[in-house]
Image 1 (cartoon, one colour):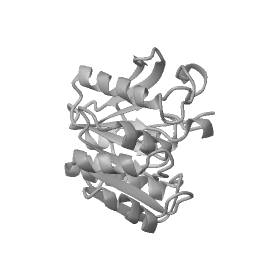
Image 2: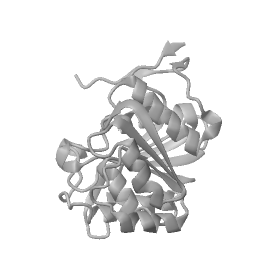
Image 3: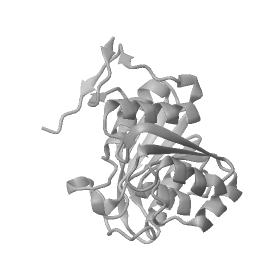
Image 4: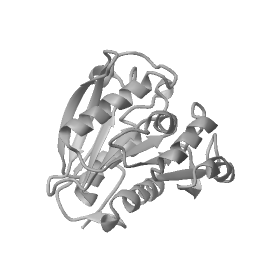
Amino acid sequence: MTPLSSNSVLPAVREDLLLRTSDGVTLRAELALPEWTDPVATLICVHPLTTHGGSMESHLFRKMSWRLPAMAGLAVLRFNMRGAGTGPSRSGGSFDSCHGEGLDLGAVLSDVTARGLPEPWLVGWSFGTDVVLKFGDRSPVRGAILLSPPLRFADGDDLAHWALTRRPLTVLVPEYDDYLRPDEAEQRFAAVPQANVKGVAEAGHLWVGERFVRIVLNEIVRTVAPAAYPLPTDWSGPMTRWSDL
């Protein structure tokens, strides 16, 4: 058994995707599928703020893609919204302040439907949570998990609308978040009766550190693939190590 670390990459079937939005923007994406089974559910990763370097390469989403197909039988689809990413992985278009990003999410959900991927759950992080709350109420979405929601672009009307959908909502809020901390989050999300708000002690907005990565991944798995909870901390099968050198 080998301990899992921040750069552990476990086996999966990975495919680079090109998606087209209804307004003609080309998006870059990656789909990771389990090698050993049909996926039991699908995670759709909606990344942090594009203008601050957020992309599908943001570390929590890479680690979901690297680990959860093998460890939990989940499909993980991560994508760069318009204007996000660098080099060949950069999506077309430009940041649109949580307007055109709704069309980006729509293009991804259309692809998920066309592929017949099961039980899609949205996983939004920071700015991505605003995109989820404003535009995630559509078929085939099963529910959503929000990480470090700032509630910067999403407002009370969006929360009220999500409440009416009755779609489950898990909200993970760092104790030391830069924008919205657990006590205020409890108050703001009280408008969504089905929201399960969980404060995470000692965590920050960016969830830096393997300890916090494991908390996030375990909470996701507990919600969407409970048979795989808790995740192991060691791995006995094939493993590679990611390096950007």
